Structure formats: C-alpha cells, structure tokens
Image (cartoon, rainbow, N blue to C red; front, side, top):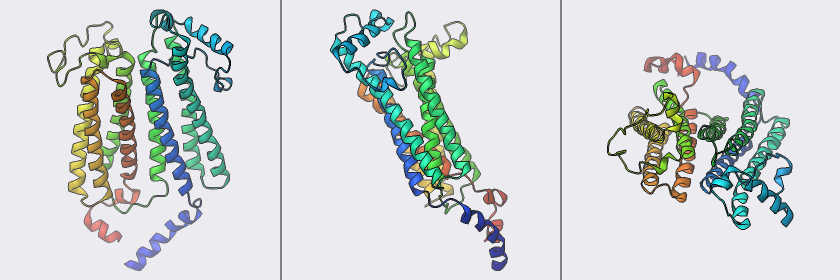
Length: 372
C-alpha cells in the first residue's frame, strides 16, 4: 500500500522541481505593496475628510508630480481653484495658506499613487527577468497592474465630477467606485501573497472554504456601501444607534423617484443599507468562527476565523462610535483603515482555506486513510 502510494505521488513531484526558485522575496514585496495600498487609502480618506480632493483641478500624470515652486505658480494654481464651484459655494474667501494646506493633501495623495506604480512595476520586471515569477503568476500580477492604472483614471473621473457646475464634492457613486477598486487591488495582492508557495498542513472542508470566500465578498460589498455613505455624507444624519429616526427601520427609504436612485441619493437608505450589511457580516463571521472551532480545533484555520470574527466585531463597534460622535476626522479615518485590515485578514483567510483538489475527490475518513 505504501509503495503504491509512493509511486502514485512521484509524477506530482516533477512540477514542483520545475517551479521557479524560492519566491519569498516576491511574497514580501507583495505584502509591502498591500501595505502601501492601505497607506494610499488612509491618505485618500484624510484628503476627503479635509475637503482637499478638488484643490488640484487638472490631471497631469507626469508633470503633476512637481508641486508649485514659486509664488507665481502658487497664485496660478489658486486662481484655478477659485474658478471651481466648491470655492465659490463653500470656500469663498479662503486664504492662500489655507489653499496650500488642502493642495498638499491632494498632491500627496497623487504622488503616493505614482510611487506605488513604480514600486509595483519595477520589481515585477526584475522578478520576472530573474525567473522568480512564472507565466501564470505574472499574468495575474499584470492584471492587478492594469487595475492600478484604471484606478488612476477613475480617480480623475471622480475629481472631474466634483468640478461640474453646482458641485461642491465628488459624485458619491464615483467615490464608492474609486474606494472599491482600491480595495479589490489590495485584496488581490493579499490573496496572491498569502497563497504563494505555501504548504497546507490541514484540509479545510469545502463548506468553510466557501463561507470564507463569501465573507471576503461581503466585506468588499460593505466597503462599497461605506464609500456611498462617505460620498453622500450619510453619516452626518441619524446619529443614533440601534434606532434610526426612532425606529429600527426609518421612514422615507424610497421617498425619491425614480426609486432606484434612492440607493445612492437617499441618505436614509444609504446608511440603512450600510447598517444591515454590517449586521449580516458580523453574524456570518461569528457563525464561521464557531463552525471552524468545532470542525478544525487546534488549526490555523480556527485561529484565523476566530481572529477575523473579533476584527469584524471591533470594526462594527468603531463604526457605531463614529456615527454617535457625528463622524469626527480621527474616528472616520480609523474606521476606514480598520476596514482595510478586515479585508486583508479575510482575503488571506479565504486564500488559505481553499480546499486542495485532491481533498475534493475524497472527503470520508476511509478515503483519507486509503490515500495515506
């Protein structure tokens, strides 16, 4: 029995020998890239919360990396901002020093995006040239790179929406898309890095694997809904919990017409959907942790599921505090960064919970014993 098993396993050893050499450096690089994306989201959140996002009225991917260096250049940039609806309707009378403050946030946000692009593509070329990235991994990483370029374009489309007549902020849908795309890139980086050249010492049941993946998708949905809350400033209304406007379900959820626009423009429905998804996410995370603790005691999957449930609970509590305090900058920024931590944890957990192909073919203890 054991000799037969050894013979049957021999063909599987060849691909491992043909695989690229150690990719520990690649994995470390991907985790560093993920950390840079979190920093980008944090700076973007601070840029939005300080009202700085519309301070730069042009998109210059190359020359825009250099900030104004003279009094004349600053005067020109300030004049461009003074022509925007946000200045005329909201910031009339702003001083040059106040403008320089908000300009600095937006410029820093864009500069960090450029640096992330360089930090991604230059090492990617080096690792590929050295044979540490195979074709499949390379195409996956190139896909993330394309998403990164698209993210830059979406960022400008978002800013342009706030420069339209009568606008004092960017369109909520475009803000939500910008945040969600950044989150998807971050999740992809963590997903790839977490599974790179890792050996699993446990077989996770398909049920737990599917639940972990569902949690990852639900976190992304919740982040998108959070982007809508931020973009429509829905967090500045109904600052009570657990009730909204004196009830569990507030009135006027579909007061606007056409009805579908309520999901974006109606602050009551926007906040209500964010609350409901938070409840669903917390319930699913707790059930998943309980299931993992019963099914896989003493395993990494159990520990990850338990930690994930704790993170989701902490994030929910932080969201409630942010709402009750009427969205102070520190709490809103902490809530946004914590969302990235939850997404990173659930992405790594979902990747490591994937059931190996051999395990799908035999799930019973008898089959497992025969395979051994």
